[in-house]
Amino acid sequence: MSSATSKTQVDIELEHYRDGYPALAAWMNRDPDHETYVFRRFHRLGARSILHSQSRLIALEKETDDLDNEARKSDDFEARQSSRRYETLIRHSEDSNRSENKRLEKLEELERRLKEYYEMLLLQSQIAAHNGPSIRVLDTCRDYVQGRAYTSTNNQSMPIISGRAKDFLSEKADLIALRRPPEEDLLSRYLQDNWPFPSREASDPLDRTTIYKNKHVVRTVAFIS
Image 1 (cartoon, rainbow, N blue to C red):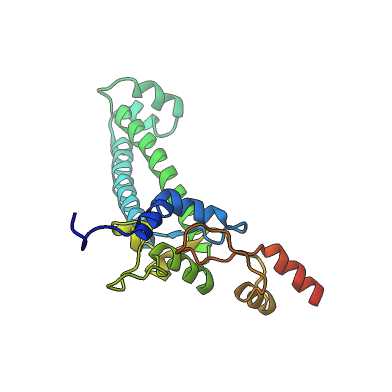
Image 2: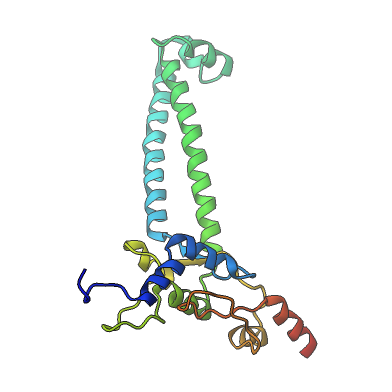
């Protein structure tokens, strides 16, 4: 291996500390308030998935209505009665040659698809209700994930993960913060951004994260107030 491509001792040590997803997960878990739990929302994909499910239901709605109309206009008394009496529908559905068999299959599919659709809507509404990370938290996460503290001869950083996922923090509007301190008054936000007694517990030389417990902010605000 030529000297131009050989790794320095510092690079080897950094690779030991910054071993990808294990190190990133450990770093996220180190924050006692879990403010570092910042992930992609995938808003566009969520909307795309809901639209697909909605279109599938629209098609299923048409198929169900057509089967109901066929039964309503049928000369078969039992077929018409199946729309009025559940027991009749179930009894005739056991015969694969009767229309009730297909009607019941569509109704059962409708039940499954509606359940999936409603669950998607509820989950998406919960995701939409969450805030994104604060500027302070996002800057901290980006600094660690991208390895901005690393200085090389060509001024490149050292991201902790590679591939397309290494840029997952790039689009702020598509990020969700799973945990955010409940205190939103000006004094609390100021202390969160400028806590005078932070601690640093990291072996990774590229980890410039300082940590404080939010309960200390709460107590300080209560004392001042």
